[in-house]
Image (cartoon, rainbow, N blue to C red; front, side, top):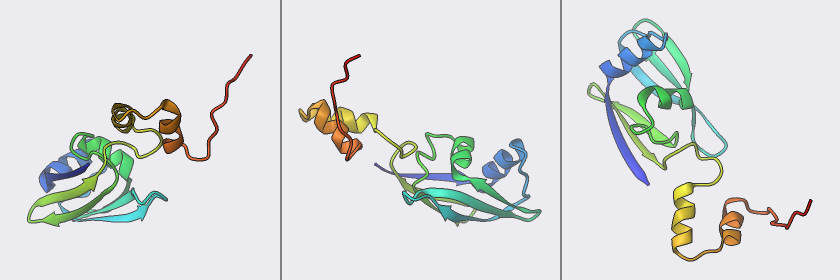
Length: 128
C-alpha cells in the first residue's frame, strides 16, 4: 500500500533529455496540480537551463511504474536524490484487481464487490 522510491537527480536529468525535455541540472521538483482524487496532476521541474511542466502520468511512465507506483505521492529533493513517498499502485480509477481478489478470498459475492467499487450502480439481468 505505502511505498518509497529514491531516484538520483542525475538519472532524472538523463530521462528528461531522452524525452526531449532538457532542463539542465535539476534544482527543484514541485507538485503544481492535483486531480479530484488528490493525486498528482502535474509537476514543475526547474533546472539551470529552463523549467517544464509535466503531467504526472507521463512522469510516472518515464521513471517506471515499479518505481513510481502511482500518482498518489509526495516528492522532495534530499541531497542529490528525489525521494518519493506514495500509496497505492496503479491509476486510481475504477476496479482494483487485487482488492477484488482480497474481497473474494473473504467470501464476498460479486454483487457486493461490484457495489463497493461502483456505488449507486444497479445490477440487472439483461435479456436480448
